[in-house]
Image 1: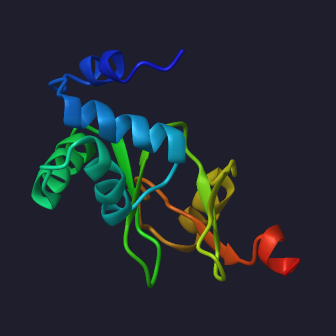
Image 2: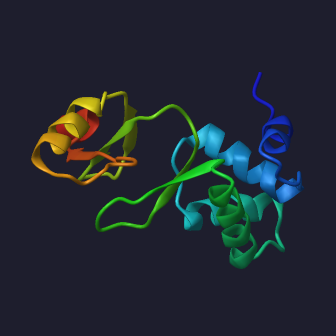
Amino acid sequence: MFNSSILLKEYNLKVTPQRVAIVDELYKNGHMNVDDLYKNLLEKFPSISLATIYKNINAMVEKIFLNEVKIPETKSVYELIKEEHSHLVCSSCGKIEDIMIDTSVLQSSLLKQSSFKVQSSEVIFTGVCENCQNC
């Protein structure tokens, strides 16, 4: 069973009610931008500020507990760290899905074409999800 408090402790992050709520929201929703997190957390913490959410998000990203996904032409979204994966983004509704793709073939190809040493990769595919295709 998922336990936010234990997970935060494993990453040496102080367990606060706000952090637990942020982690729970991300676990439940997968990918969220700060504005959506803020709206959802206001219900539970009416006095929470946007600055508090940014502060906590930044601390969790620094500890490599959260991953910032930078999607072109939209706000960054955040997700809990998991095994390496890529993203599918619907250009119509904005839905984001994880997809497991081995990027080692791409990295190998890059090594043949350049002396650049790749340390990490982030692949984002855009298209139209099944729901939007059927509308």
